[in-house]
Amino acid sequence: MDGDPDAFGDLYLVCLQRLYRYTFFRVGDRSLAEDLTESVFLRAWEARRGFHIGTSPFIGWLYRIAHNVVVDHYRTSRPGAELEDRLPSQENVAERMEELEQRRQLATALRSLDPTSQQVISLRFAAELDHAQVARLMGRSESAVRVIQYRALRKLRALLQGE
Image (cartoon, rainbow, N blue to C red; front, side, top):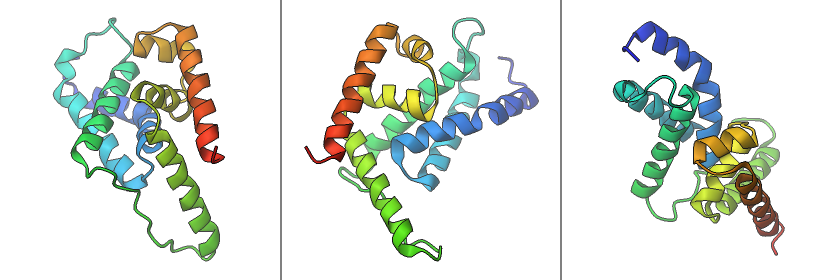
């Protein structure tokens, strides 16, 4: 990649929403996800000479950077920090609070998974990648990704149902 700002801007526009969904799914906070997504693109711009066309898809390279940004965030954040519970400005406060509680429970349950399971779930459902794409990104077989996903979803279901 030669560092053409216009070309990078086009790639930014194409990839922004997918990477935002991925980071939001991993951290559960809109503002934080926006900040982390911007960090992904900043790191990508700074490391653009390290990307070699043909070795892997550009979006895959960005997902690896996003994964590292999220991991770095959790390493440097306060241990056990919960998602911020802000009072919503919407009229139906009870409904919004219930939604926030469900998100908090999901985020807590996701954090209880091992890092590999977290990554599979995030790539499959937040980034909306298929099993083959996830397998390529993670350097695993498709069947291994399917097994990891199955076990992670089973554990999440058990955690969320209070088993």
